[in-house]
Image: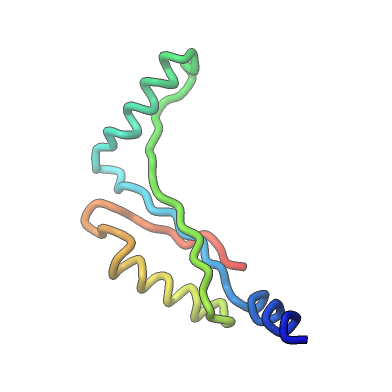
Length: 93
């Protein structure tokens, strides 16, 4: 019974996904190296590659709107360098 209760509680938690990328005007040397390497490997039909970060944040929050707001706050305060990066919350479950 206790195990079932813990499992149910975990299922009610919200997972929020965030993509962080460099702003368009910011040079992306890592993306350029990846692009060049793929080009050297024969993948010649790529115009550009921009790399970024992807986070899945498993929160204890059960309300989707509140969970997204808290993750947005986390991004602004720690996860994203707002001078050179953009972020987008792409989903929750």
